[in-house]
Image (cartoon, rainbow, N blue to C red; front, side, top):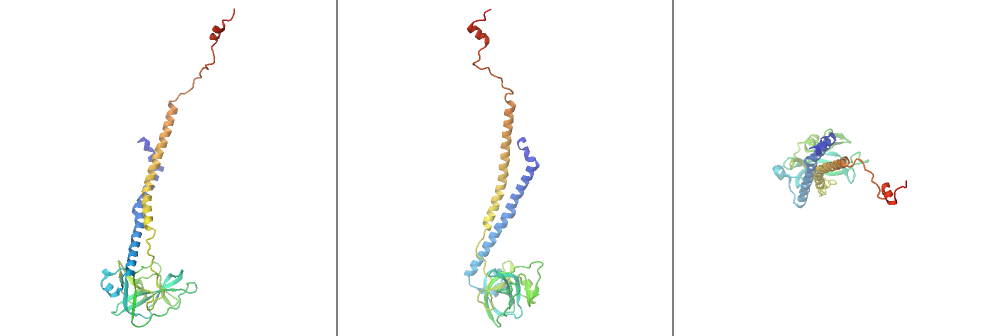
Length: 288
């Protein structure tokens, strides 16, 4: 126990606590966070890939059976655009420049009303003002698009009316129902409510919002790195403890050698020195 008593010093206790806390965060927070993002991204990519290959279905089948509702599903809808129902979404981008998403209500033939994203338009004057937005075509229309999940509402960013348009900061079916003043029917999109995003070359469509890149991203590697860090941190602490114990052993051994060694060195008589009595015997006694 005396050999490791130094571990009870405050500096070592603090270091050990930091290492344990870091490893705990790696295994319970950081790694699961990145691995979870990898799972959700892979799931989204699979849904998009399936939607590209699948034939579109009528939107009413999803509205009547919420269990069949999934985001990115290709659907068709028959009805007509509701006049004077345009809402712009601020802070969007088109070809790297500021722009707006154009939302409009679409009434199905059965009377239910959907929120439709007609696409992106570029702003004017550096994006500070929306352009003139042409009205959608009148009369009965058959449109095709994808189901998208609502983005939610950002606290503190309320709908505004500027430049002659009602404007919001996100696409959310519940919020836009209050802005437009119509009972919008949410489209099932997994575990969230959704809206219809028009595909390219559809009646009343502008530049379509591009699909996300089917790339899983770096989340898997990031998650594995956090797991590796969580393993390496305790191993590093163990190495430092071992190095400290080894160094203390060296210092103790050196101190013991000094304590048990000779205190002084006796001078030795040189072999070449011959005592006087032997010289007298060799050359004879001094004459008296």
